[in-house]
Amino acid sequence: MTRVWAPHADRVELDAEGRREEMTRGERGWWTGRALGLGTDYAFVLDGGDPLPDPRSPWQPYGVHGASRTVDHAAFAWTDNGWTPPRLADSVVYELHVGTFTAEGTFDAAIERLAYLRDLGVDYVELLPVNAFPGAHGWGYDGVDLYAVHHAYGGPEAFQRFVDAAHAHGIGVVLDVVYNHLGPAGNYLGRFGPYFTERYRTPWGPAVNYDDAGSDEVRAFVVDNAVMWVRDYHCDGLRLDAVHAIHDQSALHLLEELSSAVHAVGGFVIAESDLNDPRVVTPADRGGLGCDAQWSDDFHHALHAAMTGERDGYYRDFGPAGMVATALRGAYVYSGQHSPYRERRHGRPATGRPATAFLGYLQDHDQIGNRAWGERSGALLTREQLKVAAAIVLTAPFVPMLFMGEEWGATTPWQYFTDHEDAALAEAVRKGRRAEFAAFGWEDVPDPQDRATFERSKLDWAEATGDVLDWHRALLALRRAEPGLRDGAFADATAEGDVLTVRRGDVTVVANLRGEPVEADGEVLLASAAVKIVRR
Image (cartoon, helix red, strand yellow):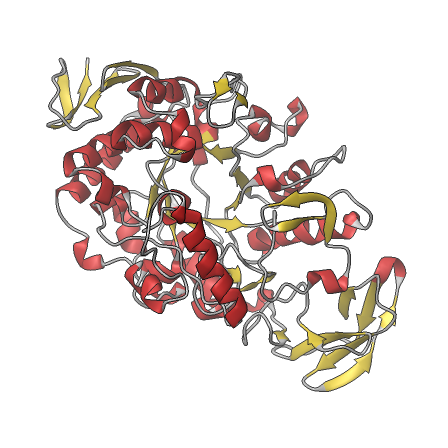
């Protein structure tokens, strides 16, 4: 049976490969029609209008404006029946974007690199969003068909092949999902029902409706989607984009409801949050929102600002090496103090939460791609500083995360790129990008719509060699070999000038954030000029 929620429509038709049939209205705005065969292209027609894609479309083979296509998720021949996901607290996460990870930019091409990631020491790959978004290439955060796998990456079965192959290599899969907004092109949800509300405003316009009239079905739409990725695609976990932009005053917050549903099918949830509120990663039975972990932006900001000297924007709140030590001791640098950038107090202590409830990183897709020219840390730091940063991240008490290519100091940028087909929207994106950076005096900002911007953001795998890669491999091997580096306890960390000293059990890291030589006493485990890792 084919179903669609369209509570405000007076008439709904099912358009199955050009043939239209009346659907029957049921309770609470749900309409039903006949069952469709596997591989059938279809759409819905509301009150005699144009055919629209299914809000729960499993595949958009013609893009976000075209017809939907039926898919049988159960038809895939999985080989991962014996798969047991690694414990997240013991793991190393590797963030990658399917479209720029390889020259081909597909799931099948990414499969060919899984053996490399396994040998590197990666436990989980975290994929930027793979649901359908406008055009052929983009970051994925302007997606509009939450249930459909992006056609340019290979579609639904290709994603299942990728996850199955990752598990065969001993690598889990975390999928980035976006529930705080939808993109501007191909977003037809508002025509079907009250998916959005003017009750709150977000940077993207009206908020997704999680607590206003009609919100029960909207919440179910999102929670069912989260469950689908774990159940039908065997993803091990989800990373929720910008949960601070999810507005919900319900007694049962959406995050708690969603986390509980994902846990029930065997998955875990990682949040992106700038709230510095430990309730995000506190179990629901202890009054929290139930997410298993969150990205640690304070640690990133502190490390980046201390090593690069940058103080623009939110980096204004950071700078001294002592702030890196503060993050290593308790995750949040701002746990109730006044934030100069926000001009108010911010955060509260992460009391009662283990360090492994946080992911720590030197760079991620946002911190690179939201720069005017998409410079990686490799363009901002010396090779010796890259080794210092890697030593701090990979011996930190957090779950470490690398961004694709970071391990060899990739020289390719990762820029902001789009492929909007609507000329007016494309021009608006161009102008918005230029205006955003004009305030900093930055000119010649790459055109997001220029295909060259996308192409130059692809990894150059010929670079995957050298001393920085060897250093990362050695650090990852050390992390696996030393249980004290994975014990979940926050670090004993201090700073004197630019020299940071981090004690994790009987392992001590002494590092000069400016890349100048340091000395340390003890049995040397790993050493470079500006960083020494010893056992005392």
